[in-house]
Image (cartoon, rainbow, N blue to C red; front, side, top):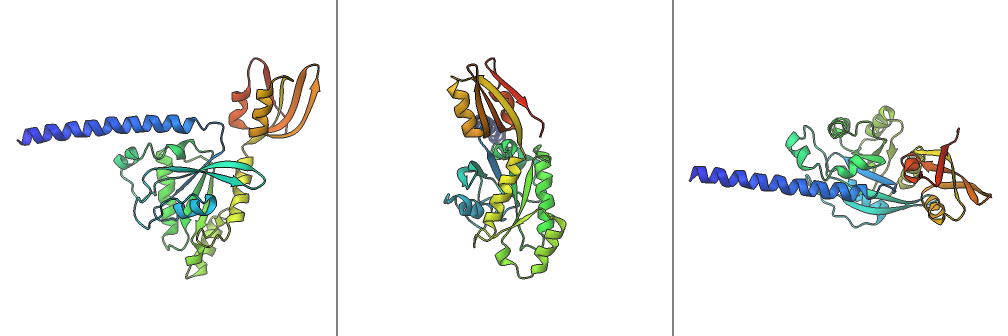
Length: 264
């Protein structure tokens, strides 16, 4: 009987690993299909208030609970930034200190949003006296999944819960580019929006695109994904000066489309 139980347990584990691989592959395809979009991912220690912040920014109605791993899958919602456009914002599982390697593997599909995002919003519970330890724990997990060098904006959340303002002052001194907010009261959300736009714009480069004047597909693509500053028509061609995201430079280039990066 013991041998039979072991055999059944082994088969169950293999089945679960196979299902996990299928979920991971599906998630990768889903995330990569958003290649042309501006994608931002919320990361942070568990109970940092990521889901509450997502609701405040997008009105998404995402499940919120003060509980470990209350968000086990990712939810992606549209976030419309004034004077910018649409961003896809994803909520992810909360990290903990010394996250076991087998859990990192289990959450790999969930964390695919983080791996593929253009920008990370690292949300911290600024009212927690262990906030700096939590920051380091999250950085460690991000390094494990290959995101250590990804553009990241630190968000000091829950400032409405601060009993001692000196906690926030210390964090701001150690992390001068961080943005202080309260997802609950909405304080600081405009400043966060501006910081996100500035961070996303850093990925844009001045470019010149030359295509046939009849190529409506390119014109439509640039109007949707670039900041077009000037266009002129010459001998059946259109020359467009714009700021284009770096990751789309090769995407738009083709036999009938020339793309050149200009000096800043």
